Image (cartoon, rainbow, N blue to C red; front, side):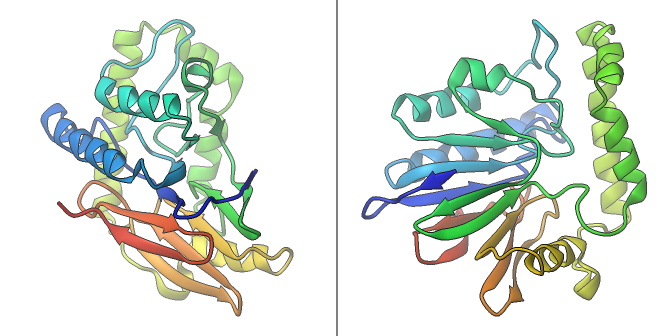
Length: 254
């Protein structure tokens, strides 16, 4: 993917909205805030990358999608109607995205990191789950969740049952991670940072942009490379912006 920025245009990045969590009321307030942010940036946006875990749970049956999020979906539909590219990535909570957003709104959905060139700067962009060393249990679980046969079996469940089961598991997973202090900075053991360093040894990128960790991070990968983690929108409301020359993290404050 190659993007050439016009004067005064920027590319925006955000991840981990976790729409739907932890309850309907809280999620609706967050959804409204996200929509206000999208409205604020749309005049400057050359493209918007939504880098995974946009939904706390998402599963596409052949003829059914999860209820809710209509205001958010309407807003990104408006952005597409204005000609602004919107790019989705799946995360570990919404990895069952298929072709709904692509067919209905013309939004590409990526399941693995991709290379993007913006004004001759090279970026590697992805959600980040399952990358780097360690976390063998999750990597095994992800193979099961992304297996077409296993997904087919899940589709045999009535949506009222299947979505309820998945939402309960999603909430338990999030609570479990908080209890284990998974969101704390791990220093030299910060595994996505290590992943970026390993990639940089083989191929140069100016910027590595990921989500998943729920930590806004700006860390050097090499003399000419930086790793940015976009943080989350449950409590921090952080996002990334690139003007063609510089990448920076920002906070949406009202």
